[in-house]
Length: 146
Image 1 (spheres, rainbow, N blue to C red):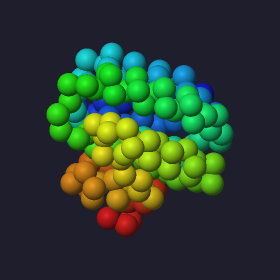
Image 2 (cartoon, rainbow, N blue to C red; image 1 turned 60 degrees about the horizontal axis):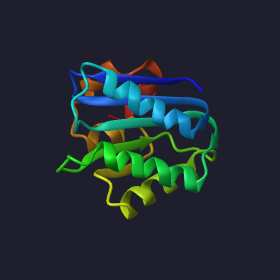
Image 3 (cartoon, rainbow, N blue to C red; image 1 turned 60 degrees about the vertical axis):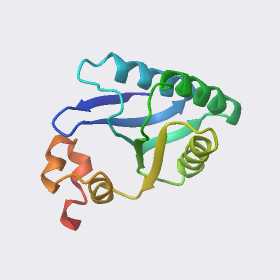
């Protein structure tokens, strides 16, 4: 499954686009790519776009282990990090809910919010409409709503 990890330093956020079949290894790989990016700063918000996912193959136990790993990685974070999940489809609904609920139940340092589209992403993160220029073209399909 290809994953695109972009640190958009102009907006001080991470933008991840998942596509195809998603496994637990993809979540670990995304975290490594994000942290290896020299523009990444611990604590900046992240947007995970799942609109192009065709299958989610992640079990509850795998997600619990990933949540534990993430808590260890972010153990020194004192302020909640905004994590926005966008692109909910029939394929991703359950996975998004599991991620959101596990984050809340595990006291992970994330404030997870599921939104329907990029206008809501911009509003939630208090970004200007011009910020869409830094995202891939498919993210601008709803720009008429701004």
